[in-house]
Every structure is written in C-alpha cells, then in structure tokens.
Amino acid sequence: VDRTRAQELGFTERDVANSLLISLSSSFQVTPNFWTDPKSGINYPVAIQTPQHLVNSIDAITSTSLAGNDPAHPQLLSNLVSLERNETPADISHTNVQPVFDIYANVQGADLGRVSDQVTKIVNEFRPKLSPGSTINVRGQVESMNSAFGKLGLGLIFAAALIYFLMVVNFQSWTDPFIIITALPGAFAGILWMLFLTHTTFNVESMMGAIMSIGVATANSILMITFANEQLREGRSALDAAIAAGHTRLRPVVMTALAMIIGMVPMALGLGEGGEQNAPLGRAVIGGLLLATVATLFFVPVVFSVIRHKTRPREIDDPDLVSTHLEPVTQH
Image 1 (cartoon, helix red, strand yellow):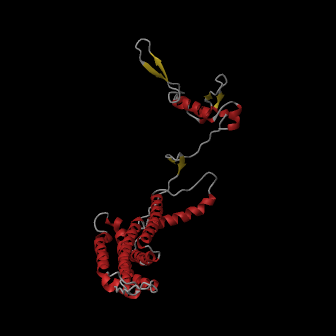
Image 2 (cartoon, helix red, strand yellow; image 1 turned 90 degrees about the vertical axis):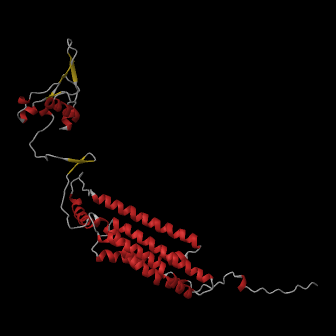
C-alpha cells in the first residue's frame, strides 16, 4: 500500500484491507447483515461479494473498487497499491504475535547444555548480520533449563548463607561454622569426579544431588565439631579433642554416609524404564559423600586443632573436683 497516496485520497491501510476482504470473501465477515422474510419471519444473511469467475487475474483484482470515508468517490485498488507475484511459506508460525521461522535439528547423542552452547555461539555470529527488526531467539527446553539452573543456584547460595548464620547462632561462634563447612570442598570435588568418570552432565538432577550430599556432609561435620567442643570443655587440648572426636564419631559418620550411598546405588545405575533420567542425582550424591566423608573424618579435625590450638582447656563444673578453702574472718 502506498501510504502517501492513500492518505491523499482519504484511505487508510485498514480501509484498503476491509474493502478487499469484502470483495473477495463477502461482507458477512466484516459487516454481517440480515433480511427478514415478511411472510415467514425467517432471517436470511445478506452478503456482498464479487463473483469468483470475475476475479481470474491480477488485473481483475487491481480493478476492485474501494470505498473509503467518502463512498461517493470510490477508488480503484490499482491507484493505492502495487501487486506482484511472490513466494511465501504455506504455514507461518507466530510467537507473541510476531511471525517466526522455527529451525529444528536432531541432537541425539549430545546433551542439551553442550548443544545450547554451540547454538549460542552460532547465533552470536549471525546477530550482527540481521536486518533491522529481525531477531534470533533460542526457545524450548533451553529456557526451562537455564531458568532451573538459575533458581537452583540462587537457592543453593541462600541455603548455604542461612545454614551458616544458623550455625553461628547455635555455636555462638564464627569459627566453628567455618570449620564445619571446610568439608564441603571435598563434597564438590567428589561430585565433579563422579560425574566426570561416569560421563554424566551437570544438569538439574545432578545439582539436586549435590545439594543432598552437601546437607549430609554438613550434618556429619556438626557432629564432629559438637563432640570436639565437649572435649574442650572437659579440659582436653584442641589436638586431643580433635582426635577423640574422630575416633568417637567414626562409626556414626560412616554409617550415615554408607546408608545414603547404598540407597542411591540403584538410582545411580539407571535401572528400569526412565531410570537414566534420575541417574545423575544418585551419582552426584554418591560421589559427594565419598570424599565428603573422608574430609569430615580427617580434614575437619585437623582444621579444628589448628584453629583452636590457642584455646585454653576449661575444667568442667564438678563439685568433687573443686576444693574450697575457708579462712576464718578476724574481726578487729
């Protein structure tokens, strides 16, 4: 549509489109009208349409009369538009009202994250070459994956901060929570190694498994530090308290981790229909607990003894161990 010419003649693009629609598809879609038979009282639809046998060429279409704001001065379509033959897709998809071209590819044998990275590189190369008004967007499962990763990562950071501050309140100390979380690097290392050895991608399921293993590792470290602090209050040195905590809490820590690991073995093997989907969760839990347990039993006590080596042993409040010396009071 020649907008300048149409404006001079008092037409808009909507007027042109409506007039052409009425001519080719009848007026019933735009301005429905009815005639009532006076004898029977039945309503009959009345539609105006150019006979199809008269619209058999482009010249016939351009000769269509258009009625604008002034019905007394109609205009021919050829005075307002220019028609040409062109090829258009038979089916056009739309997203958010905008026409889109969907490109599908077979990615069997590759994980979604790797394919997403490769597609993003290609898209970034072609974005500067796009014509004005055109955009390239990556949609589908990638959006759900990125959203889930972002929410889980934010939740993990928030949970870690909340747990740390709760431990600070519980232990009335900033150093004890720090000693407890020194087992977490071992958990992360175990998770990464297990995923690497089993050729498993780091996805939403494996991140959930990482959160589970971190929670168990933190609970085991709390048991160790709590017992070590009790030994300090009984008068032992930091080194002796750490050794005693390692010996005493060895069985509870190992049993807790072993029970979780054995329970995750069937899931990690991916047995059964659809089992491979949850396999990353089990593998992350097993790998994280294997190294986190070792770090809890051996590394955490070492850190405790190093940080608390200057702490003076305090005697317990036992009446049998406290001697009282009374001196007579002399009055002058």
